[in-house]
Length: 253
Image (cartoon, rainbow, N blue to C red; front, top):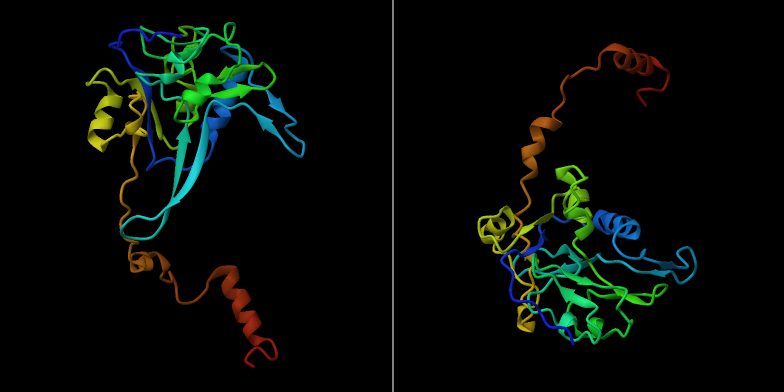
């Protein structure tokens, strides 16, 4: 079995704002695109245009309808990928050492050359964040785009995970959650970020920002000034057309 390294001071991870995510799946598409051409083997698809398509994804978005204690039901979009847990059970259960946690930044990765596809890591992960690639016969998971965030040939603005770079709603944030002064740590503190399933004791690095209560629907009278007629009588071509139609036989009937 694989041993975990001592806790690292740097804890790279994601902060996902469930209040902002619109469920557009842009992060899913960007993740699939980057990781199919980047780190490790491509993410395969089977019969993508057939009757029973299947494929490997490192990031997925699920949608749930929830009912708050007060107010109307609402739809919450829930992105899910590897949470890079500090006490990662997928690592300690691996019989070949293929799953491992980096000591320098806390990222959990898979050495695909050593993976035998036994699936024990998927069984041990309480979040369902591991997937078997049917074509490669190895387990796949989110890498936090490790081949991208340290790539000095890229512009600095692009040295973030592909899902973060592409999110049109700004719902995904990347940084060092081991640094209490980092932007992501301050965001978690301000918004009350939470662990996913803390009862599992895995201490995930990734954090979720809960949906904020929605205010009551605004009074529609606020729109009244924008709905008032700007003129009593039509002018120009519309005025001429209105007068012409009014003179036609039977217009008043």
